[in-house]
Image (cartoon, rainbow, N blue to C red; front, side, top):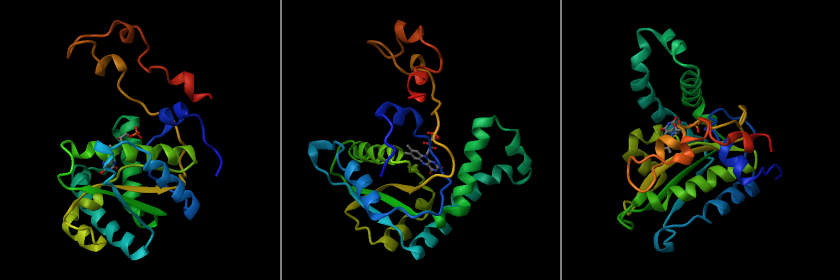
Length: 224
Ligand SMILES: Cc1cc2nc3c(=O)[nH]c(=O)nc-3n(C[C@H](O)[C@H](O)[C@H](O)COP(=O)(O)O)c2cc1C
């Protein structure tokens, strides 16, 4: 286990990479990811998150099948004219192609992590799960792996629940395919701070943010 760029470099470059090499994720690496994930905060420190790490091929095959449903629905927009995808702006096109790749290769994902948590335990339910999910994604980035939230298999939620034996006491929050990426980690492009951060009141501009470049401070971290 090497790699481990700085925390900031990881945050600025943890793109949603959806193409994986066939290399398995060894137990010690998976343990490190999960051990980092559970360092996250949760309401009242309840730690009611439960993670299922799936390597079983039959289970992945089934999830693969279920992942086709939302994709076919989505892709229907382009069925008359599939070339239309190629006319989309570059970032949208590349992102869509990577989703398509994962839909077609989901069953080859080295490990799929499913995040669950107690139903009704928190007033803001996802708030006590997604900090751990982000820790997991940053830990993956730190160790040269990658992953992203990919909820397409949840299109068959009840069957999904039954397949994995998830009790009714738990909600299913997200599905995370994880592996060693065959694409490169790279800058995550977001709306500028000035457009999404206000000062004092909703809608009130923050002068300092207004004076910064549109891409923010990524140059500070990408080269390190
Ligand atoms: C709650 C949540 C649900 C998501 N669901 C999906 C999904 O079902 N399929 C998918 O391909 N990506 C999904 N994503 C990933 C986002 O599309 C991705 O993080 C976003 O486009 C930013 O990508 P980037 O970091 O590569 O710029 C989800 C992300 C979040 C946080």
